[in-house]
Image (cartoon, rainbow, N blue to C red; front, side, top):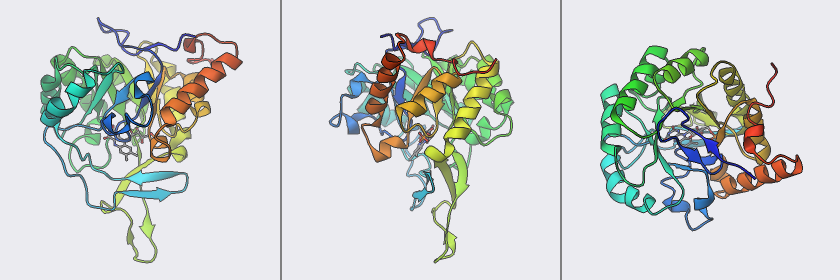
Length: 309
Ligand SMILES: Cc1cc2nc3c(=O)[nH]c(=O)nc-3n(C[C@H](O)[C@H](O)[C@H](O)COP(=O)(O)O)c2cc1C
C-alpha cells in the first residue's frame, strides 16, 4: 500500500513523507517526550512547538480550559527559543528516521527571517512551518496571517533565507481565507496548513471572571472540525499546485479521511494527543484499514475524491 505524499512538489529537493499523518505544533512538545510511548519514527513527520527568537514564558495561568466539544488554550508560545532548540533538540532529531518540522513564530517579519537563517543547514531539521496564526500573543503572528499582503511578505522573507521546504499555517480568524492562501502560495509556500485555533473565551459564573488568565484563547478539538474541513474544501477548490495539510478536530481515522476527501494531502493531529498520546499512530492504522477495506492501494486516490465538481 502506498501511503507516501509529496509536501513540497515545487521545491528542488521535494519533501516526500512516508505517510500523511503528523503531529500538530504545540500538542506534542519536541517529540522527545513521547518517544517512550510508541514508535514515533513510524509517523509521517513530527511538528514541534512554536519556536521564537528568544525563549518565552507564555501567558499567565490558567492557560487551558475545557469547553463543549473542545478546549481553549492560551499558552502564548512558551518555548525554549531557537538557539536552545538548535543546541539541545536538533542533535537528537538528527538521529531519528522521522523528519522533524520546526514551527516558527515572530513579532516582526525580521524575526521570522532571522529564525529561518539560524535554522538553515542545521542537521535534524527537515522543514519550516511558518505560524502566522497564533491568536494568543500580543504582537505579531496572527496579525501577519490576517492580511494577504503581510502574509505574503512573511512567506517571502522566510523563503529567501532557507533552502528547506516552507509550509505556512493559516488562521481561521478571517473572513477571506482564500485570498490569504493564494497570497502565500504565490509567495512560494510549499504547502499550506489549515487551520490554527479559532479565537474564543469562557467565563466562570461563580467568580464572574474570564476562565483563562489571558481572557481569550484558541478553540481546538472536535468543535472546530467542520470549520477546518470547510476551509480545506474551499481552498482546495482554487489552489491545485500547492498541497494542503488539514488540522482541526481530527480525533479519529474517519475524521482524517474526510480531510483527504475534501482535498488535503496530509493531516495533523493536535488536541487528540492530549486525550491519547498514541492517537497519531491509531489514526494512521485506521487510515490503512480503511484503504484496505475500500480496495485502494494508494492514499493519493482519496485526495479530493469527495469534491463536488
Ligand atoms: C495546547 C495547544 C498548543 C498549541 N500550540 C501551537 C503552536 O505553538 N504553534 C501552532 O502553530 N499551533 C499551535 N496549536 C494549534 C494546533 O497545532 C492545531 O493547529 C489546532 O489545535 C487545531 O487542531 P486540533 O483541533 O487537532 O487540536 C496549539 C494547540 C493547542 C491545543
